[in-house]
Image (cartoon, rainbow, N blue to C red; front, side, top):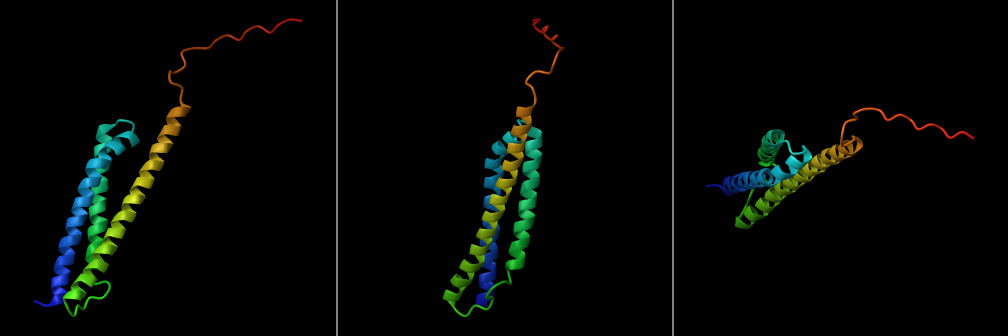
Amino acid sequence: MDRTVITYVLYLALSIGLTIWVARTLSHSGRVFLADVFQGSEKLADAVNHLLVVGFYLVNLGFVALWLRGGDTHVQDVAGIFTALSYKVGTVLLVLGVLHLLNVYVLNRIRRRGLIDSEQRPPVPPQGWTPAAPLPQG
């Protein structure tokens, strides 16, 4: 088998495995954060979590597929396999990290906005009017 094909197979196995591991980790750990973002609404948190995981898979696996031919694709020797793999897998890991940070940033902005909105509402709805005190005469 050609060394380039071996590199492709190893790259796909590593990248897909890492993508699945990161998605599961983020989904499991992010559920609590999303419940806080959506102020305890578990159904909404689970739905958004699922949508984020699906989007994460689509973006990352699409990038992995496109990046298959990126960089130096002709491998001459065994050292070239490791060089190509480090370049390709390293790029995939950087993309995974950037997407993770972007997700956390956006969700944190949503969470802060929700906290600001909850602070602006009175804790108890108004139940009536208090008459104004008479002005002092004199």
